[in-house]
Image 1: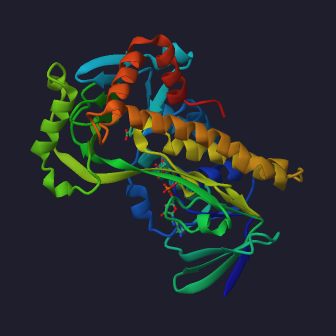
Image 2: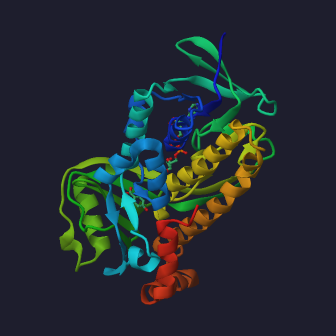
Length: 391
Ligand code: APR
Ligand code: PHB
C-alpha cells in the first residue's frame, strides 16, 4: 500500500471540493482531492448558474474573479409570470445590491480545475472505493484505489465534498437526515437559441411551472415542470417549444426564439438536510450534507457558503488557533442552510402546479402569488433571499 500525507484530504471535485482546495491553497495549506469520476465527466455536468454576490466574492478569493467579471452577467432583476402576466422583481433596487450574477456552474468547475492543476495542485481522478477511516482520531486517513494500486492518504482533516451520492455522509454516525421528496420534476433543456428575455423568467401556469434562463453568451437554459417518471425521448424539439410558449402565455409567447435542443434530461427534486455536518475530523460540505430543489438557485451558493466557513475554520486550526471555529462549523453552516432550504421550499411550493390543483391549498398559493406581486414588502423579502442572505 502506498502511503503519504496531506493536511486536508478532500473527497469530491465538484464546486465544493474545488473551491475549498483553492481557498486553502492560497493560505499555503496542502490538499489532495480524490474524485471518483474522470475529468471529462466532471467538466461536462450542466447545473444551475445563478451566483449570489457572496459566491462571486469567494470565487474572487479563489483566483477566478477575472473570469467571472468577464463572462458573468449581472442581473438586477428577475421576472415572475403568473398565468401569462409578467411582473419584475427589482432585486437590485429592493436590496441595495447589484443583484445576482449568471455564470454557468460548468464554467466554475472547469476554471477551478484548470487553476488548481496549473498551480501544481493535485486531483486524483477515477479514485476508486474512497473510504474515510479513523476520523475520530487526530490521524484520520483516506483509503482508495488508483491505477490498480491501494493508497492511503494520512490527513489532519477530511472534507466530505462528494455530493448527494457520496460516501462521507454515512461516516457521520447518528446523523439525522431531514428529507422531502417533491412530487415534481424538471425537464431541463439546453438550446442553441437566444433567451427570450435579458432576465430570468419564472413562470407559474395552470399547465405547470417553466423557467427561462440562459447560458451566456447566446444559449437558453430552459426548464418545464413534469412528472418525475417521464421519458425525455417523448419530448421532441417541437413539443418542448410549444409547451414553453404555452406556459409563457399568449402575450409573451412571441418572445421565444426556437433553436436546436442540445441536451434534455429529467431532474427529480428533493430537499435534504443532514445534521450534524461534522464527526471527529470529518466535515461535510455542499450536496454531501444538503440538497435543495433548484427553484431558488441555491445549490451552488450553499456549497460556497459551507466552504467559506470551513476554510476559515481549517485555517484557524492549522495556524494553532483554538479550534473553536471547527467546533462551531456544523452549527454555523446549518443556520444558513436551513434559511436557504426554507426559501427554496417556498419558491418551489409557490411556483409549481400542486398535485391537488383544484383544492384549497391551490387557491391559497394563487392568493399568495397575487399578494407577492402587488406588495413591495413581500417582493423585498423574495429579493433579499434570492440575492443571498449574509454569510
Ligand atoms: N469518491 C470520490 N468522489 C466522489 C464520490 C466518492 N465516493 N462520490 C461522489 N464523488 C464526486 C462526484 O463525482 C462529484 O464530482 O464528488 C463530487 C460532488 O460534486 P457535486 O455533486 O457537484 O456537489 P458539490 O460540490 O457539493 O456542489 C454542489 O453542485 O450538485 C450541484 O446543485 C448542486 O449546485 C450544487 C452544487
Ligand atoms: C439555470 O440557469 O440553470 C437556473 C437558473 C435559476 C434557477 C435554476 C436553474 O432557479
